[in-house]
Picture 1 (cartoon, rainbow, N blue to C red):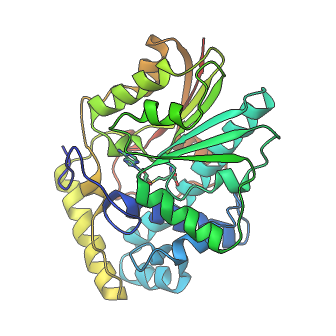
Picture 2: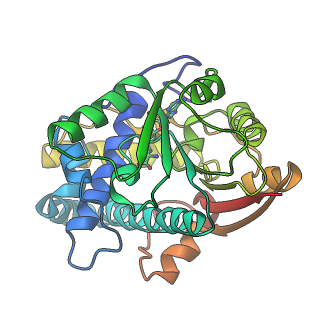
Length: 312
Ligand SMILES: C[S@@+](CC[C@H](N)C(=O)[O-])C[C@H]1O[C@@H](n2cnc3c(N)ncnc32)[C@H](O)[C@@H]1O
């Protein structure tokens, strides 16, 4: 269950689930501007700048983080962790796409693409088509912002403005997707915003559209966190936001489906015609020297895994 969601809710870039796309883009902008960045997303800052004001400004302004540090060091650690986590996650999935195109795949689908600028910033071989699926207003905002700043895609980019709980396979096919060609799929920052049965349905649909040799990469939703712990953290974040003068209009945890019976992504894929591998995001953060200790944020099981799979 999620506190704020309905089965057919919609949003733009500044509201509800749309605003989570701004949050993660702000983390990428911050990492890109840092002294020793792990990733380079030159468009993230631009995309965040036009999306209004919000709690994500904390990630863009080191003086605000310093203020938070002085008030509540554990809350500040959560921000540091988030920035590092997003950098590591972006780095991991950038490498996934580099490997996929090196293996000859030329059809890419980014599910819930939000403010992901990979279609514009990655080094795609000639002949690559990148499909992006997200809610209509989210895709429109990104396209308008980048076009207004003369940023052009680095591949053939096709948008599929539709909710992933609707008949997106039909919309994707209508946009030119070829189910006979191997595809590289990405589900990053998405599964937690779908209920458990919606996640299963999504993977069934992807599997039906995936020719042999297709690949998929996904960030798992992470495990259920206790309501009591979430409530405590939400209150601390709200208090801090007020103290540093930012508006926290919503708590992201309230947008997430905290379904305890969610299928294991790796297990599901292995049982449905894919060969899957997974690793804890915590291990990848440590491997890249990006681990930030967040004692307030639960046990290791609460963190996501990065799953990759190849269709047999
Ligand atoms: C946390 S953002 C991640 C965006 C992008 N994948 C990234 O990592 O930068 C979540 C995105 O999922 C999209 N999303 C969530 N549920 C969706 C649904 N049912 N249909 C379409 N898009 C959805 C939101 O609009 C938002 O852009």
